[in-house]
Image (cartoon, helix red, strand yellow):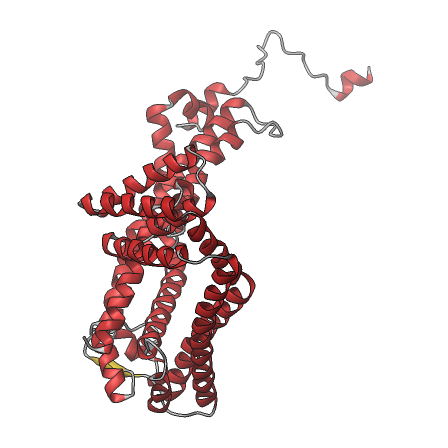
Length: 424
């Protein structure tokens, strides 16, 4: 397996792990996670329409500050759902096809013609597969690809920026692990080791049961259901917190194979600590193991620091890759490519949001005109009483409903006196 294939496989395993982890989270967390994906121009249109169509009418209808009569408020309130429906129909009918067009243009390299070469990568998606890009970058020490018929070559400055971002992410992870180990890892591991030492039979019995049940399961869903039931059983029986943590740790693995591997690992560790005779021996073993792990982390940090210094000096992609080869499980080139891909997606998303907003505003007059045309007809059809009261259909309606002045007859009229008569 090539470095690129290993990187891609690792990425897939990480995605599967994340998926498996979400499946065992509480329903409330899963719901929030799903809602976080409901973003963008179309979701915004739908949310605004929901407020316009369902919430606004309530406040219009029951606005105690309004001096208008009940029928007038009702007439105004009923306008909101019609407005919401027209907003969704007109906006979605334009924005969705527009976004698809932008994606198509991005894959075909259309944006290359709109920008200079130094910025042509901003919105253009690669045609090649991820592993092909990683292989090419590893061999040629450059990032170049095709977007449709256009060849895009990232400038040295952009590659340096991507390398620095990838190294900073690596340093953040390493430094975080080192700090966590210094503050909490040793104490937790000693506590777990002491539990193994004092509860050998209980741990081995539980692990044997888990191994047997997992082996009989046919798919990941069945395993998940079994662990849910097992954890409920342990909690009902007021099992030790350490035992609960062990089972939860095993159940959080993304698939059958990793669950089986985790059971084997814990089984071996528990047997080792089960042989120790004192807490002091447990603490010594934990300290030795953690220090060995920390030593590897410090070596990794030193290599990452060297990579960052090389980038600051302006050294080439090739030179930085040489230093990265000292990293355990090196995925540096893959991380740089992923950074670039993420930037393209972010730029394209922002571009679509801005242009989508412009398109939505452009069609707003059309939607308003449609509303002004459709709403009176809708009210005439379904709410004629409200409709008659709120707008006249003909001028005759106003004439007939207007108060008529009193008309005097000739006989009733008072004669007007002349000046001579007034003088007399």
